[in-house]
Image: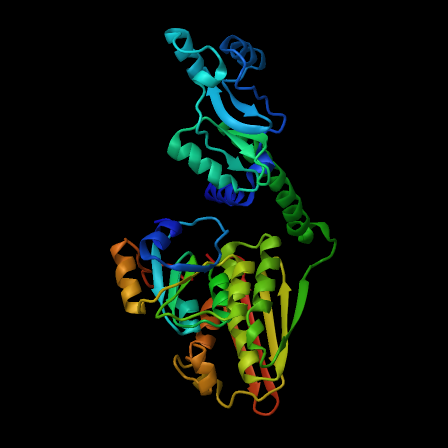
Length: 120
Length: 305
């Protein structure tokens, strides 16, 4: 599913990466532990987290993730948004809890990464 | 076309503005000229439609289809204003190309007059043909630039005369600089990409370095990351001056962590970092002395099939 369509369906607020090309998203990953994301998320995943500090952009960029969703009304730090714009990583905000976000994304056809399907 | 090519086009249509690609010397006609005259304009210029402009502003658009309607029906008047489409959709020259493309797509328009924002004067026209032409041109330019850069960098090893060639890159990491965490790993990744290193290799190197870089930031006063790129492997050396790891075996156990609370609150210090480095590397050696510092050596082979 196109990220733009996901944003529309889910009513996410887009705070970074607005002007970057639309991408197709098929999978996602949830974690607040950055090394866990590094170990288990896959290229192009949507990452749902509560962390809002600039390092989430470094992780997303390193893993070439499709975007970051901050759940539960969390707001990213200003530097996070700046970095995300530089790196072209979309950051989306939601008032829903991480559980709710994942549940609704699953309904839209976004499923989990099959663990260990790919080494990195 | 491969995926990279499609991605590039997507990037371009969000990147380029309508003004970048539009045809500028636009042929337009006045609403008061006759349909006979229109027929001549279309025939002479070999075009299938033309914007109708009054005092520089768009008032309509007229195409061959309207001309045919007029020829078959011959009712009402015989000037362009009687047959043109009046509520014509225009695009601004500073709008992104994607805007024009989605209008073509959704409404089935053949052409869109381009107007500037201030006085709404017609400054150009875009058609599907004009867009395709400009995209092909852009891709070609981009392709050449990337080719040249890739060539320059990727042939480095072949072009240098020596028995063996190693490219060395050295980076400093400041202790405690959480805000800039990942900068070194990001820069190394960029450089490896330019050197035409394969994606699975540069990703593994970058991830291993990211984890090591964060360790320097959280647990030391800073340190140095050295990357040695050889034709057969990439070797990374990360060194700091303390505090050192009391028991490396403990540190390598998944979930083992000495991280203080503030580090854990940031989502780090879960005891996965060193395991991630190990997973990404073909060889990993940690030498650590408490009070002296830690030296981490990582090797990623170029061909790991």
